[in-house]
Length: 194
Image 1 (spheres, one colour):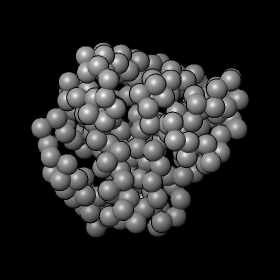
Image 2 (cartoon, rainbow, N blue to C red):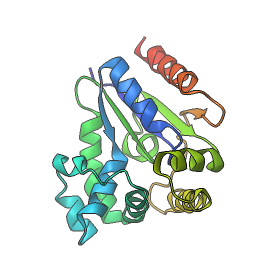
Image 3 (cartoon, one colour):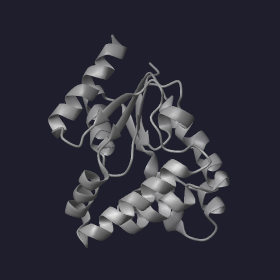
C-alpha cells in the first residue's frame, strides 16, 4: 500500500511529535525532512555538494537538533540546488510501499502534493518560542526573535515557501494538548484509510 501523510508547519509547532506518533500508530516509516537540511548544513563545505552526497548515516549525527543547526538548515534550504538535490530523496521515501509520514515545511505543497493526508501544524510564535526555550534553554527573548526570524525566512523564500496546502487540515496547537492534537490527526488519517 502506498499512503503518504504530509505534515507541514513552522518550528516547534508540534509536527514532529504528531508525525512520530502517527508513524507508530499506523506502522508507517517516518522522515523528518528538516534533518536533511540540518545534515547538509552540519556537513559543512559547499552546501550543494553536501546535499548531493548526503547519506542516511548523515541523518544520525547527534548535533542536528540544536538551535544553531536549525538556523543553518533554514539558510541552506533557500538554495535552489540544495532543495533540488533533496527532493528526489524525499519523494522516494514518501511513496514507499507500506506507508510513510514525512514532516517538514513544504511536503504537502511541493514535495508530495498527491499525499493522501495533509496536515498543517502551527501555533503562535510566542507559544512555539516558549516550547523551544523549554527544550533548549538560553535566553527566551532571543529564542522568540530567532523563531520570528526563521518564520520570515521560511515563509518568504522564493522556492517552496512555508504555507498550508489548500487541502490541508490545519491544527493550531497553541492551546491544544498533545493528546487532542494527536486525536485530531489520527481521526483525519483513519477517515482517509477508510
